[in-house]
Length: 217
Image (cartoon, helix red, strand yellow):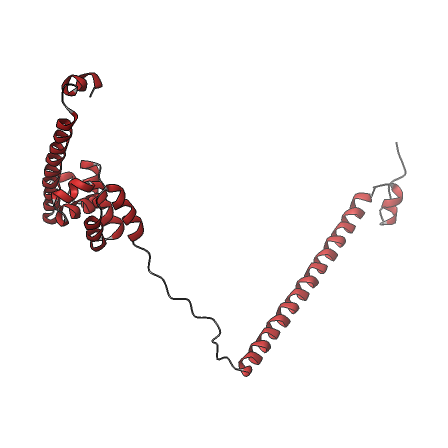
């Protein structure tokens, strides 16, 4: 689509005429798109898309993505838009805005938005105000109920004291083991030092009961 070619087609036309042409083209597109989503709905509900051998075990989402580059949420919201609203509403706000209202706010709120909005900009503001919020979860119950008695507190204190004593005993035992390990390391080092210092001199051999033969040829 080159601008030079478009200029030849439209430069001589009054802008009012061009506007009416655009409106008519848009209506025609919407009409054809409505037929498209009717066909897609038929294929989904009858599962006939699986008659194509390569999609016999596939989901409809897979088929939509491969054939039309479309996600299932996109298809579903646009199909709902054509089911719920007539062409004048879609012409005014655009199929993208209407389907987004359904996807973001739900069908019920989308009806109100389409009814109130006069322009796509107004519709987008209403969509922001009416978007679905995640449900508020009830607050988790406290671990200790408010009606805990003094006796319960004393029991908790005793349990905490036992835990502290156990932890302290374990720490002391660990310290004892670490001290024993250090002693063993020192003993091993001491024996290794003695081995390294031992020299096989006649005096050293004699000290362990080995007498070297003094006769040397």
